[in-house]
Length: 120
Image (cartoon, rainbow, N blue to C red; front, side):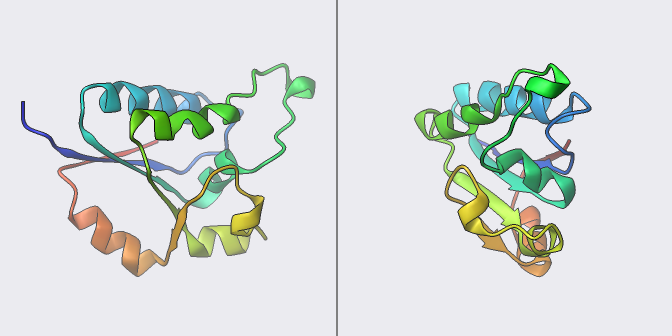
């Protein structure tokens, strides 16, 4: 089996739509097939990694702890768009897991290296 480079781009807030949870499920499935998986968080997608998510009031299961399990699936390439993080007054200390913060230009270069890019 040939290994391909899959990049999943997360642009949506973690709750209110199915995009964030669906992305996470597809990421885990792709990694289970020993593919090279990367995740990018940009726009409101940066909120998916924010510490301290409280979902009781919206009656949604808080799936954010799952991001801490990614390393167990050999998913260690997590990137955050610097501009998106700054626009939302977030820092790396606000995030659940270690990430690499990149500029839009750096992300564009990274996108070009991928075999498959899926946006959620």
